[in-house]
Image (cartoon, rainbow, N blue to C red):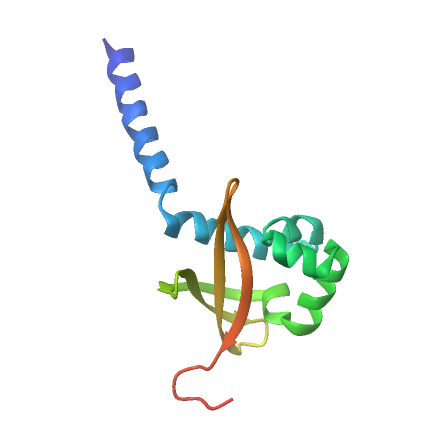
Length: 136
């Protein structure tokens, strides 16, 4: 009887976990977090795998992509603290707002355009946003 109860509890817990993974918010945060972790490890091939096919086509190789991020988005390559803000739908696209505090303590606000494909969520582009109350 104990094993039956344990099995039911485990099944319910797993079902709850699977349901949570199916939400766009969870999947999107997982993809962005995984890409940031790949950049922390200088694993440009893995980081490149989270980019949408159009981004991959634009850069052609993980090395080109990694170089662009190192030079153009150093806060993404070496983030300090990462906070996920709101997920919004804008003209049919999902955009995840992310606040990154870099290694020097400077705050950056980025918007990640997310694209859903057969194999899950991918990053379709990233743009810098103005911080509220700050002129760029």
